[in-house]
Image (tube, rainbow, N blue to C red; front, side, top):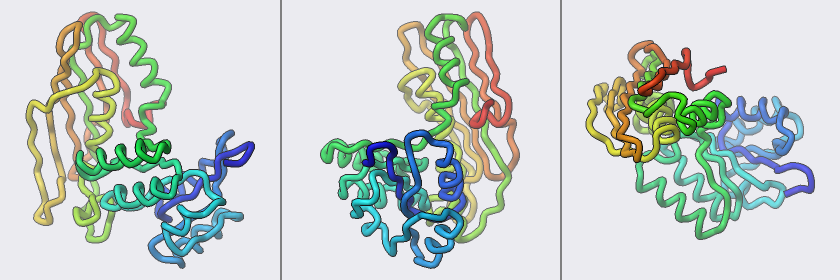
Length: 261
């Protein structure tokens, strides 16, 4: 790490990687240093948009460079575990785009590797850091809402399933559950604590991609159990709101709640 700023390397050169690269210019603690992509020409095209960015021909080469302090993993979901482990093995801090992994076992493997290597590793669930989420957490803790009883979150954006699209193609870890379901799960756990899955249903396409899903969580709390109802879809536009109901009051975040201002 430099004396002033963390030097970031990016795995991937797609839309989310470009968004990260554009926004890092506002950071007081970080600077874009390098990029690697599945294809060298993609990384080179990416670097032209962000002058001063060093191009690497492979992910291991970037992770092993002493010009990089931390790695942002912005590759397709199916590669998150593999690429996080590459960076961790190289001793680099990791910020992995959501979802952290495509199953619980993969997430545990990443966490165990980071702990063993004594490096920082986190899922890039930026919604948790929105000021409005911190405010909701505070209102629950102070009892302003009374006993937290119910959380309802919907998140759906119509998106045609396209082969090769990392958002919808199941072979790349695509589908509504991976793309959108993680938001509701993460926020429900953040606000109401650990949960048990009570039930749910998933509608899948012929390719096996999750298109629409709904599930119910139960949170065991000392003040009384709470229930979360979460629905997601790539087949339709949903309300995209979050409503937190307590015994005294109810708060609603307008659409889309993952970008609440």
